[in-house]
Length: 345
Image (spheres, helix red, strand yellow):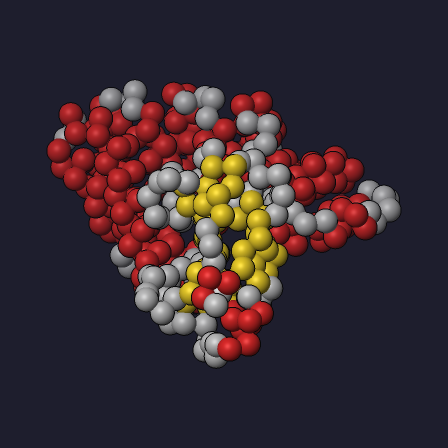
């Protein structure tokens, strides 16, 4: 991936832009609300990244320190709620409110805000899945009840390839003891997810198969590379002549990224790996996106490149060594071969 500093900057800038777009209709009610949302949303996004993006955040001391920053967010939420009470017909305002409550752990209030948002935006698959998750989290036993399951199925009506919807549907079946149905949902999902998700999904399928009295997962499915259907499979290696004559730092890293063909240099998908892990066989997909508003799956063509950074920084320097960029028409037909150092002979 990229350095924390770059991620923080990208996250805050993206959140600020999204907040401005979402909160713009609210400026008519109160300029104070509009400004409060602009300030609070990037702050919440930053805090949420710190929580879910770092294992250290599981430390109670870190959680307590983060919670101490909440009052300003609570005030912004209160003003947003007041604005929506005056004018409930603000669908994106309800979406923003729901996500804010969810980020702060207000499960019951998040559920109600998501249900209100769905009254205005009933056909958004992402919102339906988020709402289903909020309903389940508000349940004392965290069960996906009939209401939440209905939302997940409705999300698939609008987006049959929605991965999170299929995952949660499998969870719902497992919770109900419908193990064969869980197997069917998850095995349909398996070829479509990235490699890391597939590694986590296969043990769950194995457990569901065992509970259903089914034989183990077929070897072809157990070993098949995942993600080829919804991303770009990339193979990265060093040019042998380059590797033989150039001494590379032991702590060097490799960034593999895809950017819009003919577009801005900001990548739409990027992974960070250790140089010692080469050769690599990975899949770049939407799970590697830096911003939810810029996804690989929305593009018609991308340019894929691999780069060695001796400093470990995501920022390019004159000492970096890159592969030649390869243009890929989406959906990709096969793996992309990247050779680092071939041009440096």
